[in-house]
Length: 372
Ligand code: ATP
Ligand code: MG
Image 1 (cartoon, rainbow, N blue to C red):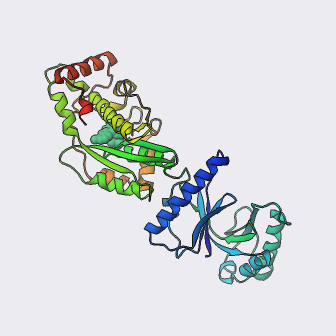
Image 2 (tube, protein in one colour):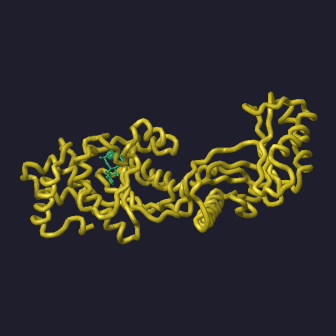
Image 3 (cartoon, rainbow, N blue to C red):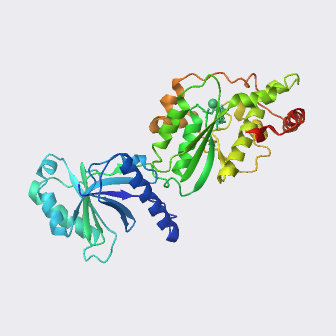
């Protein structure tokens, strides 16, 4: 392997955005290679591709978000060299049941068209090894790409996660619990280019999975790792202790608590220059996530709240959690029953919620989320 050829792709990428995208992706790739201890000659972009020149080994680049696919490739100065290289791959072609050549040209000034390149190169392989050509479903699909005066040849396309490089979309605060959902929500927003600040309200006794989840999410954002802020959930419950004589309070604790988490997240976001808040809410998945409750919880939160899982089914969320590696740590430790979560209402009434919140503020004499 001479190079790793990397494909990225958002159809909307044009002009200045494209340069920004490429530079961010190259920076993230360099940071990732350094962390993995992989030496390389350079990382460059050319004609809509990124190249890692002379890498010491093939890394798992699916960890770098923004990459659609990548191929270990060999570089040649002309088509004759390509033919010689393929004609010497006896171990590959003599055992294969079929093959095809798939050519493309980034630079259309090359005198041969892509189908002509495919035919010329394919003929050499067929003459030498008599391996049948199968255009629809070949065992070996040989990629031949002509890019800025060089030919690149590869035999596999390894899929990445696609999306955008972490960091290019700006900052978001994520409310992260130890559950299955919020780490997936965090991942999906990172995949859209957001740099994250993870905020967790710790229940006691404290379990170690938040640092573990933070570590897994960080592995997809080398060089642009999420910040982790751990706060005490007890502080929230202590604000509501004064309300225990109120008949409705118990049933509204959960909604009040989520509202407070969002207000604290908003405060952190404003301080740190983040432009929104992310939660793992999924419509009607649990009692706290009915439309009534979500409307009450979010009342008075001025920054936008993004919930990428809102319309997803649990099985699909679990599927992503398993793929990214957060599922095991999320289910490993059984969650403490939440101290505020006794028979929560599923149909929070906005006026009742606001009246309760007012009462808390009045009795305390200050606004509780400002105490964080
Ligand atoms: P998750 O699987 O993410 O825990 P869930 O389905 O258990 O979600 P809830 O417990 O109602 O649902 O939480 C809804 C959202 O509120 C979470 O996805 C997360 O964004 C936020 N949240 C809940 N608990 C905490 C916490 N202790 N610290 C920070 N955020 C939290
Ligand atoms: Mg939860």
